[in-house]
Length: 242
Image 1: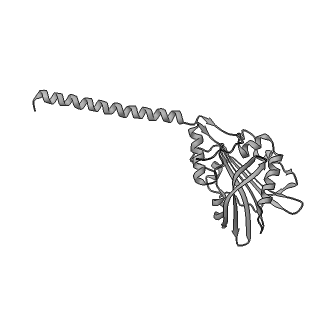
Image 2: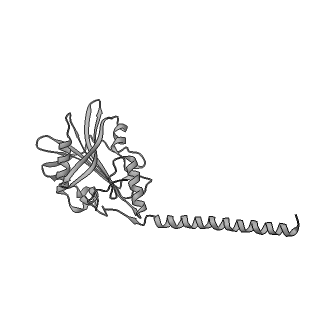
Image 3: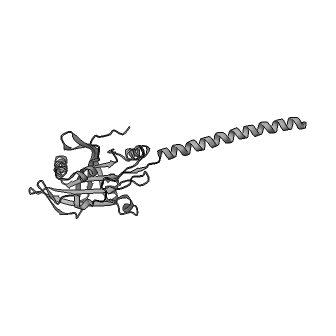
């Protein structure tokens, strides 16, 4: 190969290298720009500086706060304090002998890496088997029903029925997969959402969904706007997860 051919090939190689580097550099810049544009910029904390314990009334309707003993709590693993910034656990009684246990667990940041525990995990971890686990809508007011789950959890000496829902931002995911999707949708919208788990449960042999729904309606009617926003979000419309 003569010197002229060698120089020509070297020039061509340099041009290809330059174009390749330019393409790679452009792709990296585009990726960085997209990442910057999609980076969540607003942290949603509907509870603010308020204390959850003070927002949940001790008495409302026909219900009176008694205690919180015997409740199944989220597993006390090392992440629980990071997952939940505040938690309220109470048992309420009614004059006819009905007892409903309430758990509200609030998380101030659902960033996709830490998520609320779901009862499908907590109860089996406590020795229960789930004999029923199905979709349920919890009616709070006319025109407002929250997508929830109805679960029957049984152990040797205890049969517990519960209705629960989770809110992540403006979404109400009913499964782990939907929960992750809700976090991603909020993040893509530029928001780090807050999240809440609301669980109502009772011990009994019959179907107690009517009792649990009635308790939810009475509670919702008695609380103020701050706690309402925590339980059902600022946007009262129910957004589908697609």
